[in-house]
Image (cartoon, rainbow, N blue to C red):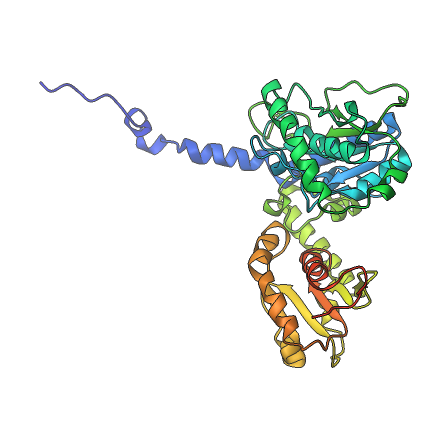
Amino acid sequence: MAAQKLPIQTSDIIFPVLSTDFSTTLSSLKRSTLAISNRLRSIAADATFVCAVADAYNLPLVANERCGSWYIPLGRKKASAYFKSTDGHTGEWAFSLRRLNTQVLGLVGETNGCVVVDSTRRGKRMPDALSKTVPIWCAVWNRLLFPNDVPAGQLHTPPQSVSASEHSQMQDRIDGFVQQARQLGVDLDTLRKQISKPLRPLWITQDSALPAEPPEYSDFIPILLCTASRRVPGGEASEGGYVQGAGDDSEGWAHGLTAQLFWENQEELLRTEEADLPELIGRFVAQSSEVGQTEEAVLIKPTTSVYIAPLAQLAREHVADESVIVACSEQPDLELQRRWKSRYLHLKCGTGKLGSRDLRNEIQKIEPFLHNMDGKIGRILIGCQTGKDISVGVALAILCLYIDDSVLVPTC
């Protein structure tokens, strides 16, 4: 008699009618836990902690974009920073020559420190941007600004997140980063007038004890690196519906809601049922778009000719003989194309992070387009959905290609 095969599937040991697709069930549970309402409540709770940190140290809040802005209420954010976690990934450590974050230097020179806010959704204690990218940034700027102060140029990392081996490897690369930064020709003398003491990173999490009185730092300028969310071991969500790093990668869950829209409408959003949130968010986004349609084109100073604006504003621009339009959108505007003819350039770009990837493929169209104008260019009008997203990258490319300190108009 042949031996009976052991059961190898759920259906072999449970009646087919009762068989459960466990994968589907688990996916459904995760979607429920990571619901929009849970995310927004988690953000609001974490923001309370962030504000408590700023108050305890009496320092201004700086959002590490884009995630950080979700955790800072309107009126509390004093500046934005752009420290990427990818510059802190193991073996890929970098000092970004494209993201110098000198605006943070200007702020801390005035306020003697700041609180940089970010989060992570991967069950980690803190994001790589705070544990490694910012410490590298501090060490490099210290060596640039205080070349004779050897201790100031040492790298400081949190031992609970960065091993001694990784710290040593990062330290070995600092000199190379400094050499690369020097080649940029940054006006260090002007920065030294703003920064009187070395920068020193310090780390704050929800496990940290906050001081009863704001501490004083006489030997360095504190850069407090605040991880907004508490750690959830093993994943993003806890049993109580709390979502670690709820504001991260908002393109995937927010239905167009931005940090600013959240804080402008937080009370209504937080009391709305999950099923009704997409419709409510859609209404807020539509209203925001209508407001954006009234915004004027903004001149990029000190140029006299490069402007950025929402796409809706471009539609109201009168055709001028020596002006050109660069429109960044999913589809070309046929009416603008008809009116502006050869002086209209469409760059096929989405919005947010995906749009920045699109721009890398489309940006090569700018140079031949402007050269075809035979030097007859008055205003360059650059538009995207908000006037503050992809259009900024295009404007930067044009500034790099055609404008220098002595020529403030395009020399195409």
